[in-house]
Length: 142
Image 1: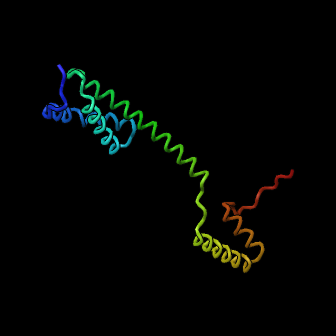
Image 2: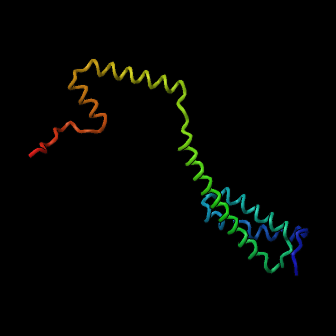
Image 3: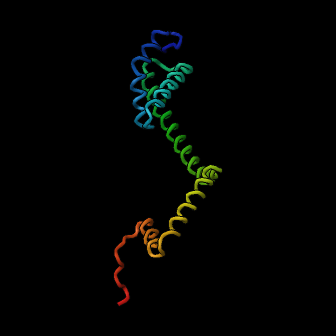
């Protein structure tokens, strides 16, 4: 016995019975529930387009297709993330004129303050800004 896709009541019943669980199955794999729900709809659309399966096999077909769809999505996300990381490293965005100006102004202010301080105080302030302690280093030349 085959379930015909043009039998809207049967298709609706199958969708209502399995859509939520198929979405959860996909969601557990890809860890993105909204995307999992979209893929769940795609699984049912694929079933509807290829509905020559025997009625007793529909559930197994749906879940097998859902898992395959989830794995394909996971692979796609992995490739996309890898490409975006690589592209980000290779294509660092150049600073804007505003960022260059702000950095220049900040450097001038810092140099003005450091020039106004005594040499020892300026050195201590610079060392402290690099997370060094004010404590005197122990004598290591024994």
